[in-house]
Length: 121
Image 1 (cartoon, one colour):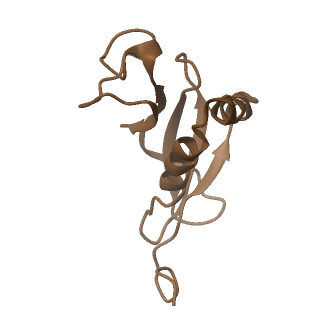
Image 2 (image 1 turned 45 degrees about the vertical axis):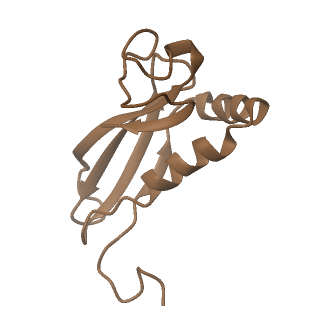
């Protein structure tokens, strides 16, 4: 029996509104050997739960290279308006931002050096 059978908890749908930037990130990840890093974070977003409400995670573009903004939305019934729940970033870190030291171009901080994608909220 899966973790979702017999449960009222629902998974999030993942909606790509990146206008081709996600595809570019996958091509970059393939060239640099970091596909697993990107896939792991996307799978984590997909596994987000929101109780018994319908939910989705929308991926949009970000100013940082190969990085994205995401926001989690819920609604109580089909056809009802979506309500934003929370948001964050799917940020690519590496030598270009010194592993996430808070400086340009990502302006995100990691507790340790990072070389790949990580979620920030």
